[in-house]
Image (cartoon, rainbow, N blue to C red):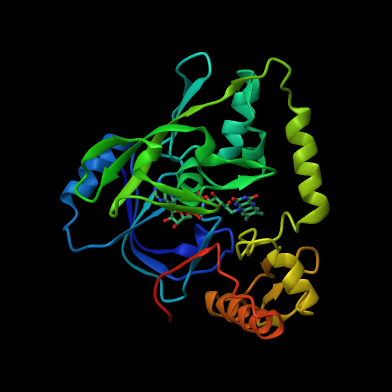
Amino acid sequence: MNGTLLRNEPMSKHTSWHAGGPADLYFTPTDAADLGEFLRELPPEVPTLWIGLGSNLLVRDGGVRGAVIATHGALNALERIGETRIHAEAGVPCARIARQCIKWALGPADFFAGIPGTLGGALAMNAGAWGGETWTHVVEVDVLDRRGTRRTRTPADYEIGYRHVRGPQQEWFIAARMEFDLKPDADETLIRDLLERRRQTQPIGEWSCGSVFTNPPGDHAARLIESAGLKGFRIGDASVSEKHANFIINHGAATAADIEAVILHVQRTVADAYDVRLHPEVRIVGERA
Ligand SMILES: Cc1cc2nc3c(=O)[nH]c(=O)nc-3n(C[C@H](O)[C@H](O)[C@H](O)COP(=O)(O)OP(=O)(O)OC[C@H]3O[C@@H](n4cnc5c(N)ncnc54)[C@H](O)[C@@H]3O)c2cc1C
């Protein structure tokens, strides 16, 4: 095992909300083989939490028992393996896939540009934007199980929907092969326009996790939250964004408990006002302090 193993690593350093208590162990492998070795040696009773860029993760203030496995900065390969096919490892940032696909004249992959996570996180969430979705393009994925055994799977092995992916338990993504169309006219202005549209409507640059709730069928979570009068609602240093009501901002010193309390208040208020239950898109993990 050649990767880096840290103890009591604050998860606030690894999440886009900049909140969250310590992980008992925080492992960054050197590559997929090193990760397999780590998993084989880790006692089977130790739980694992895989993390990409932590852009969809609320880690509670008591932190994470067991081992966090970081793919970003580790599983970094991105290559073209056919005229319209790419192979990408799980730690590759989505934005890099968007830019590289344009260089390869492949698309549509520009939707990845605004997703500030890794491919692994995008596979776990079926991340998407502007009509594009991760799994639309997946041909095969490589996974590791808890004992470090590697397998290849196809989309048929998963139940896939809007921000929803369910597959075999205790397996995590290490790479994917993805198929795109040839787009000889693709250029970077596509990405620039998309990022500009985002800047106009979302509080980009502030500490958030993007949209906190999935959209209920036929409606928008942001519309419901805004019309319930919740823009600006604040607990501690966490508040509902004034710019986009489905974002919750950490203004600097919010704890995970503050953020979770805002999430719960928004859910209750919207349920009381409209009889609609909002479901968090963000993954809430770890122990309360
Ligand atoms: C400003 C902003 C804008 C955003 N806009 C969008 C958007 O337009 N569309 C959208 O879909 N999302 C959006 N997001 C949310 C987020 O970026 C995506 O969900 C992204 O796919 C998460 O990737 P990540 O690497 O950060 O995952 P993390 O937050 O690290 O993890 C998310 C989940 O995936 C799991 N996971 C991570 N890596 C793996 C792996 N290798 N194998 C198995 N499971 C894994 C984690 O355990 C966790 O459950 C936005 C977030 C922010 C902060």
